[in-house]
Length: 298
Image (tube, rainbow, N blue to C red; front, side, top):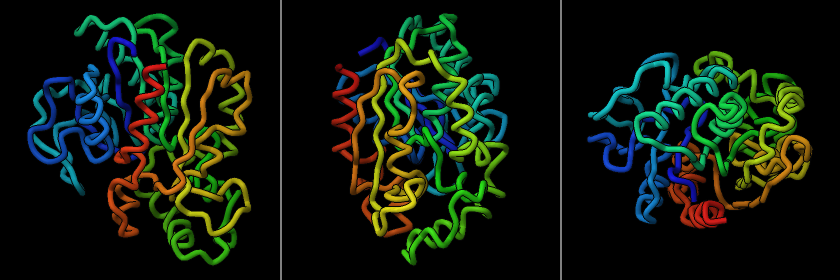
């Protein structure tokens, strides 16, 4: 394990900055994506930080939304706070700045990144930008990251449609709501999580991960059909093949271990919507925590 583990939340997530000793004083200590995973890693003795993120440019002081938080003890400037609804490269730039800040303020020289959803793309962009100017990234663990597209992006690019749901009620509901959700929650992010965009973006990332050990975990709760491969099976937002980076070329991803969490959904938002326990969400599942533990020890 590196000197520190940095947790990175995904698209449309609001996350406070936390360090091993300080977190939000009310609500969920590290936000609705990362609280359980942070607590688990702290219990394992890891030196854990969470990267601040919000919807739009600015500082993170609270999240007044569903399962939010307040009383953040240390509010970091916008320059080191990820815009969780912005573009991949902009998010990566802010994340890289945050990692450099950790290096200066905490004396950290190397880190492991554990990223949920689009946070894995922000992490990849940050690794590319660091170029040795900041803490070295030893490992990258991605949970439900759209390495090769997502339901949301692929609906917007018209590469999948309602017909591809094959009548599955849950998938139909998700696809029907995708366009309105993107319109409400994206400043570029939704357009960039399509297979069409990421195929081109991935082609420009050769060499970035050559020295980084990657573990990619994909969930697949929704399995009513087998085709098209861009969609089935999926976790509610990301196809399992995409989250496992099955089709990402070796020049881009030379060192990867892939895992499947077949019973899980993308997040506690999806667990709540489909009346599942939160432990069925990727960042709240003890079985996924065990995969993360193994990856950080490797």
